[in-house]
Length: 153
Image (cartoon, rainbow, N blue to C red; front, side, top):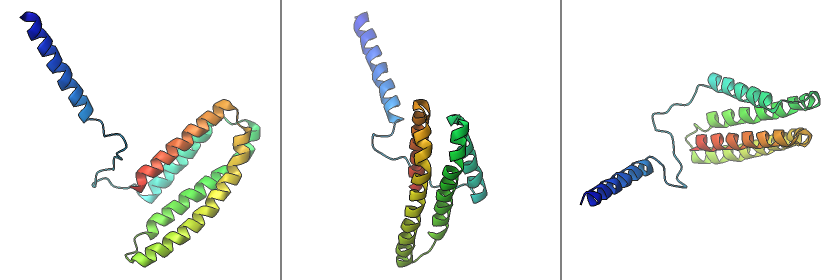
């Protein structure tokens, strides 16, 4: 009788514990959006965050002197994309749906040019990396995409 009670109690605790831990995880594939009360950083603070992320990325890559020469073009392209993103956010406050469509078309055109600029600057830099730098660069790019996707919601 004691074993049955012990077994039933242990099973109940295990089920309760697994239910609690499952309840804390969002379902697979669901996107977690920030609460409505979450506020965006002021533009000045966002610029400081972009500066810090670029500096951390550069430091983490441990660039060689030859790679340092390729970095300014890449950094300028990153900053240009960040600037376009801020401009797009500021211009989306228009109330007219037609104006929003026209603005989106202009944004896509600007983004196309900026992305080509980034690709042109990134290619020689990426080709100069060793395997460890390529892995770190890939991780950084993935994290940047994740951040960008989270802020789109």
